[in-house]
Length: 520
Image (tube, rainbow, N blue to C red; front, side, top):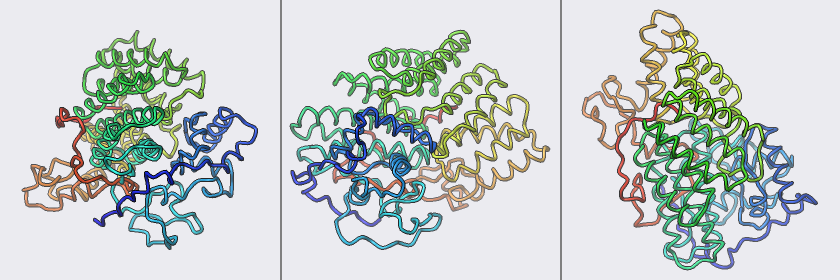
């Protein structure tokens, strides 16, 4: 792998202090930051995006703390201001923000196989429909000089890391991303010990490190590393308690509730959701409380407590209908009507109400934004399972086939395990032509690249010799996961001496090899 350029010491120098974005401030005009943030959210809904823009985000853009928006915000801003480039909006080119050495603008590079080239005339670093940058890098960590004093640039880098992980996860799932996240998480927490900072910087670093721990914990959850996920959430919760941050605490407990349900601890899921609600009561976000109510409903459903589940569902729906607010956390960009329908479908499925589960799962698939590829695959797979349980194997095979087509874009152990189970239950219906067609395509994909050609390898990939079937002699077990990250996973490097890839910051968090959650 080609080494990345070393970070310049000037990255943390006073000369790199943020410069106010006067162009963006002019575009806001006479609107207040809150009013402009509301306009951004409306524009996002017009194009099917979901961003939790608030007055604080607008302030950070105008102060220069955000030098280049993430891909979702970029699409929204381009919709609001047609014909303007990122530079016209006062932002820095994306490749400059990512820390590459200044120099002549690079010419167009050949597009690798399977990757579309940038549209003619597109600004450097910007790709049509959020297409990824080239795959020649692994995660790169622009966190300043190790051992130096953390400042505005480092705090912004941690925050940007969180946003980018979420974007990658929305599109690709967690399996190929998680192994690259331990080092940046270690580095984020190391910044808290890197000397004195201004109070504002310290608060941002703690909040950013806590959110990064939650994001990494979610990747662990989605890739079946449940013990790792639990440790990361515990670290985020400790960070929240140290700083008295109710928003971070609510987020950590909300995710912990989801994890507990998937780990087969539904009563713990209910209690964690109730703890999240107590923390979120100090905020003014009905949408956050709605999501937390759905987490609680999921726990009650797995306890087969229909009455409490229905009460939690009604509370979630009522809170959702209050609409978005400026207090909605930025991490909730995924939570829209599609997610509400999908989580309710999971509850009815757990209660054995297959017809109602199918109804809500269909709506979840239909309403999902195309950007959330992983969630489309998830809800489509759940729809297939519910249809099969409802006695419609042919319709289940059609839905499972649609999910199968998405699995070349999504790497999620949870979804793959669900699809494997659906295929297993469909096999007795193999005389049905539709089912037989799906099973044939499923077997072709299952034994494709990354699988043992003889079908004797039970693991998805032979990971550095850890696959038990790696010695079966059939060959073609595929490259290790570190070489199969999605092309977008291109924005971190780790300082020497950091923990090896795949290790958590917490030494007490070994992977337990637990199976992936049943749903999510």
